Length: 291
Image (cartoon, rainbow, N blue to C red; front, side):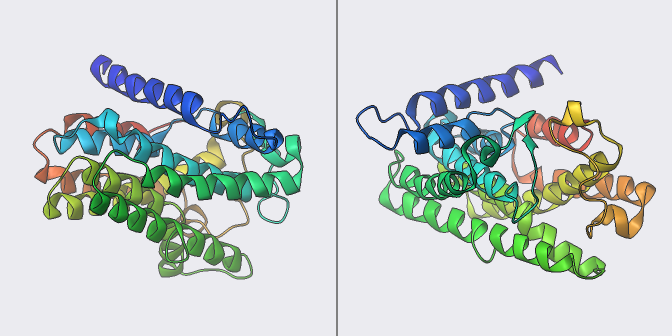
């Protein structure tokens, strides 16, 4: 466990420093309020789960994980933009995120929308400047755009909003979560394999891992929304009580079993990676977390 925590801290610390030193530091540009709003949410901390996946899958494929920092940052920018927009009054209307006021509560709704827009756009600029071949950078843009856009995360958000009008079936909830949560995790894992020069078999395995872990992660999130503590989580609890979630569909005991089942399937997909022990520990930590 000590070795696991050490590598996790190394990844997180490296990413925090990279974001702070390289993202939206424009001394000569006049739109400073925009940069302030973008950095406010981007540098708000958190588990940095998606960048960690980029780094570790790159390492597992034999690549230099530090060189993958632009890919990791791009995924985190997209994730952060989605949180800013999710918190808006027209969406989930949340006041707190990661233990402090949400972006629109500090900067206003219009600036929060623009900060999210800026982060999304900057993510693809970051990919295009990454230290890889043109072919690799184009593939990276394709991966992130497909996973984050209308066929991925954005599409999942739309399905989630539409589902609030009625009770959903298991298939419909899977359709929501495989896009809303799992898609961006898939992007992170794919980008890590891409940065590390992995094989097609490893790319496919990373996708299977991400799909199952994303579901396990989301179901655990639903459980924590019910039993978690707002101070520990850094956000309000009970906000999903009226939504179509696996917890609402199946109940607590079945959901806890589903977390275990999807985690086991995710770990099974890692068999094509010779060095997978650390990722195995990470998956277990994420799906048994209390925050």
